[in-house]
Length: 218
Image (tube, rainbow, N blue to C red; front, side, top):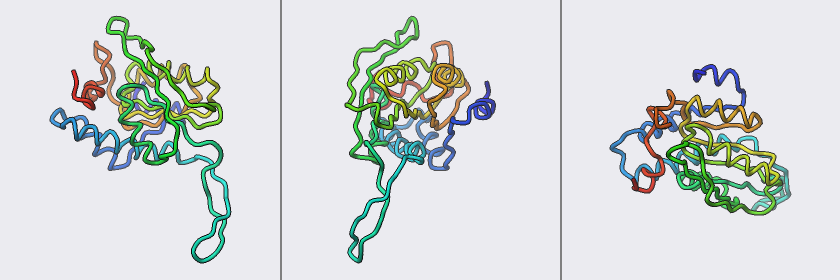
C-alpha cells in the first residue's frame, strides 16, 4: 500500500506531521549528522511523538491546596505508564518519552535481526510488575519488516497487557502492513512513512542503522 492508502485503511495509524518533527527527522536522515546530535534528536523526537501517543491517557480530579485555596485538579489515573524499549536502538527513543513521565516504569526487550533469515531473535526480556494494569508504549526508531515490533508486542500480550501503543520514527509500508495483520488493535504513532525496503530489508531512504548511529558503532 502507499502511505495514503495505509492512512485511509487504518484509522489508528497516526502520522505526526508537526513542523518540528519533520525538521528533526530531516536532520536525522543527513549522513553528516554527528553521533552526539543524532542521539539528541532521537531523544527530542521521543518526547514530541510521545506527547501525541499519550494525548488520551485517562485522568481523574483530586483535591489539592494552592497558595490561595483548595481546588479540584486532574492527575493521571491508575498505574503509571510503562515504556518498553526494543533494544538497543529503542533506548534513545525511550529516554525522550520518559521526559513526559519520569516516574514511568521501563521494560526492555532485547532482539537482534538474524542476517540470513531477517527474523528477530530474542536475547533479553525484563519487565516491571502489573503490566496488565498499565498503558504500554513500545518504542523502536525503525519499523522495517515489522518482525521485531510484532514479537515485542506478542510478549506484552502474553503478559496480559491490554492498552498498547507503538512509537517509531521511520516506517516502511511493508512493515506497517505486517504489523497490522498481527496486531490490528495496537495504535501506531509514526514520524515518517518511507518508500519501502531494499534487498537487505533496510528502510529507504531512511537513516541507515539507527542503533549504530545512536551509539557510534558499526
